[in-house]
Length: 441
Image (cartoon, rainbow, N blue to C red; front, side, top):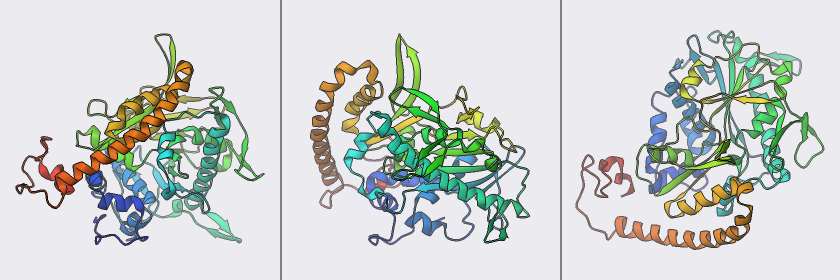
């Protein structure tokens, strides 16, 4: 599948900005290879996939990731091109039917293209109040609720103006005795990476987090942002959702995920990646809420980090956990008054920060301060001003260093001997040229 088969330079406005970045920015060459690997053996059932990947990106990106994830878990995927729906049919005793969907920014919402450096810095900041938390989580809940209901209708069928429209489960090749799972990825607002698992916990089970109290409470509904309309929480309590066996969810599938995977594999990168993972443990007498972790080959980010499976307690057909436990994917169950994380799994990601390497140390320090504020209240007031001043200086310095690096190493006037594709890279990384700086030249 020729995902990146386009003519350069890219036509303005035609292609998604993330696709354009992967095509044109040398720093993303390894990330581009990772996506291409995910596409091996992927079936384009309707002939539209490549165009959608290049122009709308997110839904196709999500399907490629799921394809790779299901393969890594050992599932047998139905690749028959005639079996056009649902999105994934996983064969075998533990198999299930999957409809993939993404939650996008609302039509009049602030577009992702307007994201600034300040939005990135917000990932370093813990939610300061219940109001700030709700401003992000409630918008996510609304977007996810709409996405899930639309996919449920497609699977079970529905009535439209008195006419019955059959669902995917009525297709001859679909085994409706298998579990039905909705796989949802969030791109619902500029700061979608901060919603972690909290939005789905509230939507599916009615369990709503309070940053101020640092505890959970049961809620029946929320107000749709900027309206007086009620949005129901705990939808898995409702019998009308019992056809959904579980929801696979992530809000962390970004280009930063690709960078983390590249770093984890020991690939050269101009960027560093930091995961802030939920801990909630007592260590040496201190209650540690979250732990910033630098991604390295010895402390890697897994393909499954940031992926969650929310089981429906009232599902007609239960989803087996065997394949997920082997991959250490975080599974969540609930009795609608509390919830449980499966033991021995990948810890939940609260957010990920991917930035240029010179900023790594200050990012780590600030993340530790902000996500464990209760331990550092006396330090934070003084350090926050220092942090902002430092960031302004380091960003300028980093931009200058990167510009100089490209100019000296890859500029038109820079002369070097021609290097063979399979020869050691001249940057002394120890990796073959074709896997390292070949795409940067």
